Amino acid sequence: MNKILILLAAATCALAGSQTQDFAARLSDYHDESGHGDRMMLCSEMPGERKLQVTFFSLNNAQEFLTGANNANLKEITPVEFQETKKRKNCSMNVDDMAINYGLKRSWTRLNGDMSQTVNVPNVPFLRIGHAYCDTDHDATECIPSLVSAGEGYIKEGKSVSEVFYQGVDISSYQKVIAETPALKRELPELEQSTFSILNELNYPNKYTLNSDSDSYGKIMLMDDQSELMWWKSSSSDAICSQFPGTTGDLMFPGKITEQSVLHFYSEDTCTTATLKFANKDTSFGFNALKFVLYPLESQGHTSSCYCTDGNCLPQGAINVKNCQRGLPYIMSYPHFYDGDNSYRQNLVGMSPDEAKHQSYFIIEPVTGMIIESSQKYQVNVDVKPFAHPDQGLVGGFKDSIVPLYWFNKQFKLDETHIKAIKAMLENPSTGTTSPTTVKPVVGDDSETLAEVQQKLRDIWTQIHVMSVVVFTFIVLAVLVLAGFSIVQFRESKKRRNAPVLPAYAAYETKQ
Ligand SMILES: *[C@@H]1O[C@H](CO)[C@@H](O)[C@H](O)[C@H]1NC(C)=O
Image 1: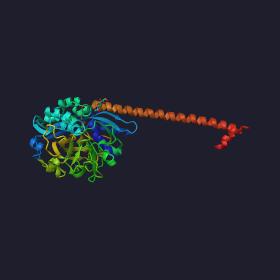
Image 2: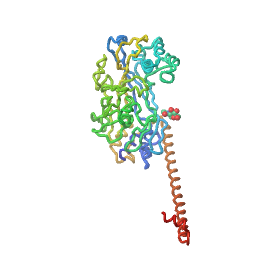
Image 3: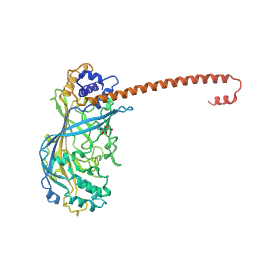
Image 4: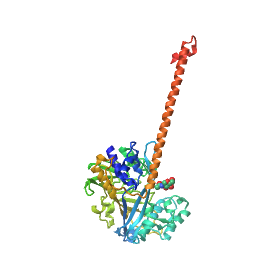
């Protein structure tokens, strides 16, 4: 295990490099005797390149679909691409269990693709407000007609990808309705603003606590301060449904991976455990790497009905994430329902699953567990159901449908510097703590933040040391005082025992 940690340390610490120290120096700096250098790796900068490629579907026959005359006919538009940045902030270590806490900051910048392409898509905010309030006992006559007269409906037509996905569509009419309807106030915070964008309203965890022990390195302990996945916890579900499955899957898996390994990580896109199985070897990086692919998505889980929502379990290939997405009516699948039940495609026109295009994979260096490359592909579908009240000035003869909105490819590629560092470590593992390589470290734009983190962690350690010394001194003093006291007592009692008559005290002594 220690060797793995050294390798891991070596592999990861290049990312924390600065211009002044070389890789080997960094390594010995991190891998000190206390072992807390390894723990600190969980605080370091996220290496590699992350991209998000998004392919929207446009509903070609919105009116026919709405009247129930025809199945939804979908057409992919040209993909658009974003750069994704993930940064760990506010890193700290727990004094009691040495777990690492950090906040994860995500941001996206547009790279390429035509954002002005227009699409017809299910109207997510409208479906949200409708099913939350217009379906139930709340007075439906209050909310739907005013939204319909403001031009809202089940489908948004002719909106640009930029508006729908990134910048946000105007939802000021919702603000007005919510303000005028007491039952809605503060219930739908994502709709009480002037715009709604899919990307900004996706509910991703912000705060993590990870185990830093060598045998569970990187395993999630808390996410947003919760120790369980609350959205899969119900009285009937098995305890395993709501447990964290392993790592975050965005940098590494615990090391020593073989072709027989079955890997688990938390997928923040499906809000569930994701499971990977070995597919083939990959030597394209100059060392032996293993390619793993995702198992089919299962709403039924392996042991029980884990991922069912409101008592409904979907057929294989999709997961209802409504409860994890604060009520937004999303259903996740693989692109084009790849690896999913045929029934999903039967009521749709335009789906053509293809392993080469739609399968998710991870290429992993098995000794360190480092992810060299990954591609996670999912499709976001909308659960489109007509509202219970038909006479709202809405067209709505259609049947309950799962309508694809877009699919995405989240790509991760470890940078050359790290790949070289791993390679060098693997070729020369015995010299791990001396001077294994001449690889130049990454120049991190966040090296100051990292330095601060290191300083904080050092401070915590100093505090622990100081505390230990204080506690130790206290114990020694206490023992000395007690010993002194006992000696005095012993002498006293001896004196008393030798004293001629003291009946009460003698009686007390015999009781003992
Ligand atoms: C870091 O902490 C500050 C202050 O508590 C907070 O405002 C900020 O959101 C945190 N950043 C992250 C990414 O969690």
